[in-house]
Amino acid sequence: MKRFAMLACAAAMAVSGCSTADGGSGTASASDARGAALGADGRVPYASTYQRYPGRPTALVGATVFDGRGGRIENGTVLFRDGEVVAVGDASLSTDGYDRIDGAGKFVTPGVIDIHSHLGDYPTPSVEAHSDGNEATSPMTPEVWAEHSVWPQDPGFTRALANGGVTALQILPGSANLTGGRSVTLKNVSARTVQGMKFPGAPYGMKMACGENPKRVYGGKGRMPSTRMGNFAVNRQMWLDAQAYDGEKRDLGKETLKGVLDGEILIHNHCYRADEMALVIDMAKEMGYKVTAFHHAVEAYKIGDLLRENDICSAIWADWYGFKMESYDGILENAALLQKAGACVVIHSDDANGIQRLNQEAAKAQAAGLRLGMDIPDADVIGWFTYNAAKAMGIGEMTGSLEAGKMADVVLWNGDPLSVYSRPEKVWIDGALMYDAMDRTRRPVSDFELGQPGEGDVK
Image 1 (cartoon, rainbow, N blue to C red):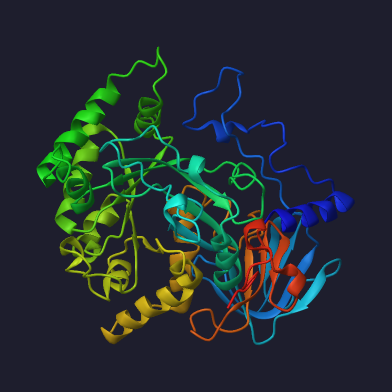
Image 2 (cartoon, helix red, strand yellow):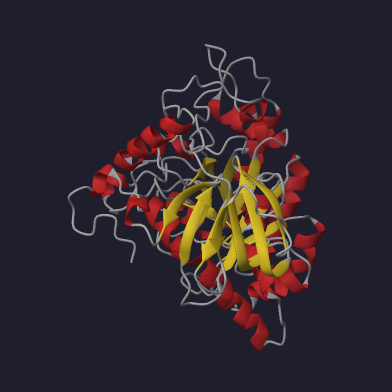
C-alpha cells in the first residue's frame, strides 16, 4: 500500500496538505484517550495519526438510497463535501457546487463495517511467519493490543475495500484465551503505519472468549481452565483482582480491565451457546461491567428477549455453524428471529474472504427469515452490516449511516447490494474516492504485491 499511499499523499499535498501517516505529532483528541494511560512523555500511546484523503464535493443522484437506519429513498440524492454527509433526500435537493454522479439504476449505502476481523493480524498469505493473532501463552492476556500485530500491507484490506465496500473494521485478537486483549478499530485506508489507519475517536474493545477454545487450549496443556466451570472461575478471579487495582504501579493488563469497569472499553465476547451467554451476562452484572456484543452467537435466537433487555448485539454469520459441538445448534433463521425479538443484529465475517461479501451474507440471512414467514425489509437488512455494526463498535455517532454531519463513508453499488450479482462501483471514505471499479488507477496495491502475479487483482 505504500506506493498507493505515497502517490495519494502527494496528490493530497497538492490540494490540502497531507500529513504523513506515521510522522504526525501524535496529538490525540480527548476521545482518543479513552482507556489508554498516558506515556512518560505525557502523550496517548500509539495515538491515531489518521488524516483523511482529499475529496471533492460530490452529489450522487438518481439512485436507490438505503440510509442504514431503515430508510429507503427511490430516485434519491446524497450530498457530501469536506469529508461529511451534507444532506440525503429526494431529487429536489439542489446539487449546485457539487460534482454530479448519475446513479440511475444503482444503489447507495453507508460504507460496510465489519465488527469482527483479523486482517493485519492474520494477513495474506497465511503462513506461520504472519500468525500474530493469538497470544496463546496464558488464558488471560488483557495486556496485549491487537494493533501491535497489524501489518498495514496486508492485501486483505484492499480486497475488502474493492470487493466488499468495507470502509471501517474492528481487528480483534483471537479466541484461544478467555481474555484475548484489546481490539482496534481502523479506517480501511492505505497507510504506512497502523497509527495512520486508526479510526479517530473510536473506543477500544476487549476480546473475551467462552466455551471450547480456552478450555481446549489450556486444558490440553494440563492447566486451568480445562472445563467451562474453570473458564468462569478464572474469569471471575481476574475481575476481582482488577477491581482491587489502585493504579499506583502501571500494569498493562489491569489498565485494560479497569477501562472496561469504567465503561471506556467495550466488551466483545466470543460465545456460541445461549445458556453460556446467559451466564456471561450474569457474570458481567456480578463484576460490574457490560457486554457490548456476543460474537459467533449461533444460539442467540434462543435468548433474543434477554439480549434485547440487556442491550447486547449479536454478531453472527448467516449459515456457518456445526463445525464444533458448541456451534452445533445454529440455524439459518438466527438473524431473522433476533430481528423479530427486537434485538440488535450484526453480520460479521471473522474471515479474510467473508469480509468481502458481508452484503451477500446478510441477504442469505434475510432469505432464511422469509422462508419462515418473516419478511424483513431490505432497508433494515442493510443496517445489519452498516449502522448496527458501528453502534456495537462505539462509532455509531460518527459513521454507519447516511445522515447529515456524519463521516462521508459511502458505497455506490452497481446493482441491488442484496443481490449476488452486485459489486461496489465506487467507495468513498470521509468523502475521498478510495476505489473506482471504472478506473484502474484507483486500485490500491501494497508493496508486498508489487511484481507478483495477481498484483492488485480484485476478482
